[in-house]
Structure formats: C-alpha cells, structure tokens
Length: 357
Image (cartoon, rainbow, N blue to C red):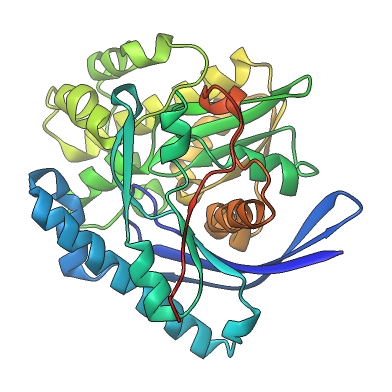
C-alpha cells in the first residue's frame, strides 16, 4: 500500500479565485482511491485581479513581478489553510499547483502559467510541483486538457463521460479503451465579462441572462466559428476569445441580451457535442453548473442523463485532479494522455521546486 498527501491548487481562467484541496491518495492492488480532507476557496485581492484581467497590456518585467506576487499569494493562503486546519506540514508530500494561465498558444509551441513555484516552496517549506502543461506542448500536444486522466482514474464509476463548465467548457469520454477529450466552447469567462459590465462578479444562477433576449444573428455567427469544425485534440485560450469571440459580440449592445445569447450558444455547443459522440450519461462539474439557467437550457436539449455531484466535487474537482497529477509525478507515472492532448506520447509532466532547507 502506498499513501501520499498532496495539496492541490487550481486557479482557472475565469479568475474566480484560488481553490485549495488537501487530498489523501492510497494506492492498493493497482487501484488509487482518494479522500478529500479539507478545502477552501479564496478570492483574488483586487490589485492582483486587476493585473490578471489586464495581463495582455503588461510588459515582460511586469509579468515577472506578477509571477512572484501570485506565488506569494498562493504561499500565504496555503500557510493560512494549513494553520486553520491544523495540518502537519511533515505529512504533506507536495503541493501541486496548476498556476494561473496568462498565455496559451500551443500552435506556437508555448503555454504560460504564473505563480512562482520556487516562491511557494520557499515560503511554505513544502516541495512544489507546477508547470504541468509545457512538456506536453513541447512534445507537439495542446497542453490541455489535463484533467481527463483524473476523471477516469478517480470518478469513472459516476458516469461514462465528464463535462467541465469552467472558464472554458471541456469534455472527456472513452471510445473503447481510448480516452478522448477537448475544449468544446467558451464558458464562464465571457459570461463573467459581461456580468462585470452590469456590476456583478458573475451572473448568479443565470438570472441576468434570463432577463435578456436572444440575438439570433449573433447566435448564428457564434455557432459558425471555425473552431467548431475542428476534430480531435483542440484547446481554447483567452487569446482566441479576444481575436475570434469578443469581436463578434459587438453586434449586440445590451449586456443582458449578450449574456442570454452566450448561454444559448454554450448550451447548443454542449448538446451538439454530447449527441454527436452518442454520450448517454455525463458527470458535470465546474462553476458553470451553478448557473441554473444554463443548465436548464442543456437539459432541454439533451436526452441523456446529466449527473450532478455533491457541492465539494462541483467546486473542487479540478484541484483534486491536479493533486492527483502531482501524485502521479511523485510515483513517476504518466500524468498526461497523448490521445487527449495530441502529443507524440503520454508523459510524466511537471517541474519540482524544493524549499532549499
């Protein structure tokens, strides 16, 4: 029997905060089980949030400073988390940090997640594993999605496919014994953007979108975007949103109408994907699952079973899975799936940072 305790960190593109999950993994008889010990979500401070929202306007020096500041923020929150829950640092084998994505251009051979690993390691006194995406991109992959290996290793008993509605929406499923996964469409990122224009951090339960009217011309334009014709491994980033998505939304001036149209677009793309791949049961997680209006649109058009897990799994599944990627790194096992990312082969990715004392 092998047991390891990992603290998983997840901060998604929707910028809704830092998720922390303390997870215990036990491997026995070639099966890994997990126990979710403690969790927490912490909102970004206003100054860091503003820098992240405007990261495209920052120079190289400013990005390096932000990388350090995010690392300090992560480390401080981990130390508070450990103190509050009376966790012994000597029992923690590693911190596995996704980092905050600020650039994702696999077509150009790079991806960048900030939140300095050396800073986190030094300030917490715990080994840190981060930069899980770069090696996959170097090997010709998309560097995403990385969650599917955790979906099937940890949650396969729940459903036969997995839908995450985060900053972007992604799906993972099996055909035979081969895992397939890819980004479907934008998710909370543009919804939060337009909710911000109405004075909200996000659209609570989809109530703002529900007040709006569908702009059918805009909806048809969004559904005709070239990305939706691509097959196989594919991923989205904020650069794609800026270039291909937000520019189209200027056709509609009313933010509530835009929110309604985006919800219709997201539900259309998700339903289309589920039906096209003959998926009859899907396990749905991510912040978007709490958008009741969006979920009602999906239910209206999807004839299969939409499985809704408990609150902790909805909120912390990705932090749990990144803890699992850290576990796989420590056991020297592949933590990516080449059929998912499009890389030349499955890899054991990540970079270890030690506290130095």
